[in-house]
Structures are given as structure tokens and as C-alpha cells.
Image 1 (cartoon, rainbow, N blue to C red):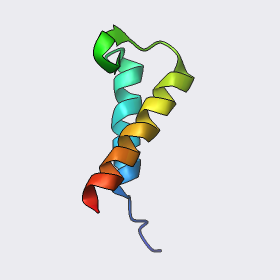
Image 2: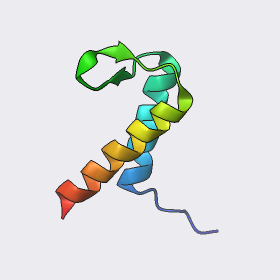
Image 3: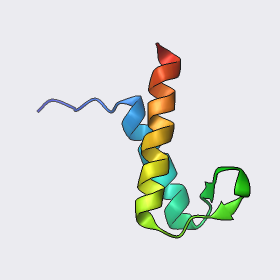
Length: 56
């Protein structure tokens, strides 16, 4: 059985979602805690996209 490679994007999304579940995810510069799961996903994907852009 082959092991599946985990991409940097998947790791970043997992980190952000963990922060959300722990109640430690902050929204932008306002420093308010994110309580909406959809907003947490949007933040995770945005940060993953920034990570991908910086690697190019």
C-alpha cells in the first residue's frame, strides 16, 4: 500500500482548522475570534493560497 503525500496546502488548512476548533483563530487585523465554520474555511483556503503563491 502506497503512502499518500500530504501537500503544504493540506497542512496549512489543517493548522487553521485546528486553531478554529480550539477557539484561537482570529479574523484579520480586528483580532476578533472566528465563530463561523464557513469563515474559518475561507481563512484557511486564503492562507493556503498565499503559501502557494510565495513558493513560486
